[in-house]
Amino acid sequence: MTSFTLARLGSPGAEIPVVRVHGRTLDARAVSADFDGAFFASAGIDRLRKALGTLPALDTAEALRVGAPIARPGKIVCIGLNYRDHAEETGAELPDEPVLFMKDPSTLVGPFDDVLIPRGSVKTDWEVELGVVIGAEARYLDSPADALACVAGYAVSHDVSEREFQLERGGQWDKGKSCETFNPFGPNLVPADQIGNPQELGLRLSVNGVVRQNGTTENMLFSVAHVIWYISQFMVLHPGDVINTGTPAGVALGIAGNPYLRAGDVVELEIDGLGRARQNLVQA
Image (cartoon, rainbow, N blue to C red; front, side):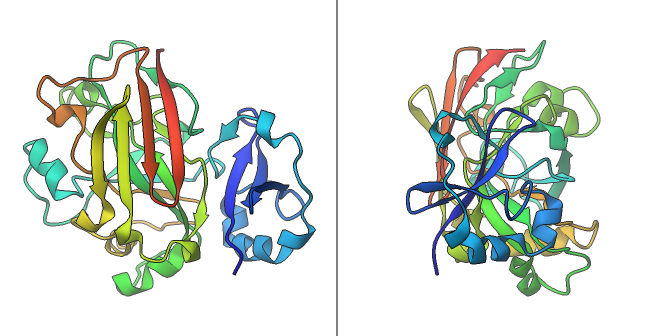
């Protein structure tokens, strides 16, 4: 089986869907106008695989911005406190069930785009996470054993958070999670059948060259399969939806002195097999 990844290149709102294979970038528009919910719902990854030998090279690829590898999802569902060490560092009790919250889908941006520190923010924080893209409807799944068949692929996700907005301003977590640019995603979407076991992936994040997070998905309290099954009991997951599966220890909230992000900071993050991302922090 030929290994390949999905990406989208070009200015915001005008990205070109491409396939990266054997060091080449191929224009995928003959298969689909974009990598969106309709693409995933129509077995798009299988169609891409069959068409690889016929897709033309995109000669301008190196000059183009790297966008998120999927078009805007219908929803982004996030899992809070899903790593034991992260829950402990923030002083939270370990949850008996997955903690769910939503993130505005418009927060999804490219993996090298700037992250905007919100006006009035003093507690903007980082979180490297395994992002899951849904490829088939998940509705009242019978068990976690059925869940991974609903996954289209995986990507590096940065669940940026504003802790004061999230924890000190009343109400739900969403307003500390849904600020503009608060979900860089990518650079690649790696098809699920090329990853195998999603519970064996290392995650790392550094700020200004200092390693802050170095964990593994093996330490999730609730596995990817469990999380998808669980969410499906409360809402329908549609093709193209995203799940952010939680973050390991090492966030600013849990570090002595709370070194929250400031304009001029640089965050770099990576997940084994999924690629690397880098964002500059700028003031909104």
